[in-house]
Length: 605
Image 1 (tube, rainbow, N blue to C red):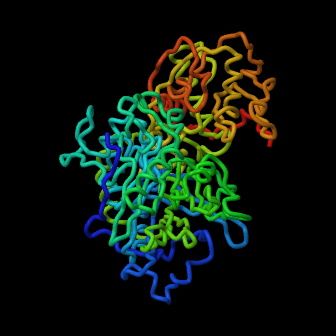
Image 2: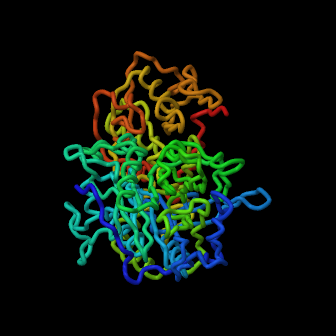
């Protein structure tokens, strides 16, 4: 496996752009590390390059996005909108996303700038809608090639199908069991995936390139790519078999030194780990009242500790939007960005390169998030790509599997869609073992809402297989296991304690299970133990309960170690089959499923 990476020159005929935002693009407030360049870099003094000259200072445009998750078509419902703060303090939502529009926005943004590089922060694939997921994400890699993506880090979802499948996405070749989907075969990504902190346990070397260097007319910018060290906690054990995941900060610092020794002093870290801004609005100022004050979470600790030799961090994983300056270990502000998810935003960052030192003049770094609005022309090549793969997917995806009376959202501590899925898994569990008592569903496994409005020609209220696939794309099995009542109480406490204390993961529960979640308390105390009821009765600590959950949870995923200790396991069909069977059995055009009320968990705030 490679321990070093080759430099890469921009492909012939590639971008010649500086930011000329589409008029309809909505822009955030830019973030500045400081007020201005050194006086010698004043544009009027002839020292600054504007894409054509060779002055001391040259602006480099860094376009970035993250967590696309194979969303080639515009995402449905709330997954296809962003929230925007208005000048008067109110908010509105804006429809966003879809690679036909993302391509148009990126191409417009590049116009006029010869020094432009496009990078991503991981999770380009995995948990993808049917259009991509059905074909093991080959359509998304094709789209990213056409988008002129230069480089990306791996994310945890790049490991959903294991390291061998990730290597195939990088290098090309037909799927090992399903073969070729088209007569042209699959060429793989023409951009490098970076996995600096993902090592083969046998060789102790990175499984993919750890870094990559962009070069253009004497300007050099290095990129180091890492995913979150906790990837094994959020991916099935099979997906990370034979791999070890190292500390993000230590790994970035290691390869920053390697790049420095090679004469590359301008460095960007692509980090698939993220933060939690104080507002859900994409244009919220998270540098108010001070630098980085409006963001919390794992990325803050990473940003505060990564070597000052790194000039900016492009992040992801949490699906949030932010443009912040977080002080580095030397106390200097450093740009940390994330562009939400599903291709709804992209970030435009200006890095001012000092040709004399080879470094970024950090006093002039500017960055802003832009909405991928749908009021611009669609990119014809992306439309053709979607149509081509859509034709192959249509016979499977267009099949109706159920009917709903309204939008079924995945939003909230307890969501209507979470209730529906848990009930579906309980029903499936009882079809396999009538003694099944309850079902639990992890919120991160619910990837899209069910919308009442038609997304095609199927008609309002019809749920197609493709829509169900978008909700549950992982092909986890529904497993049955036995737990004691005491273990179940511990499972509920693990939602808000241990690795989940800072960012709780509230399980979605099936009908009959109720309890109170007191968010005014801390840690495990947030679960009010004496409020837990199953069908109206308290749990008996010594009794045995049969529980249905997906294979990821049943293996102890998402920090639920107690769920990995179940007994008498029975492995069933995949979770989408359970949802399909439930919708088919319990709904019709004349009698659609009502929107669940999401009233099983009482939340105290």
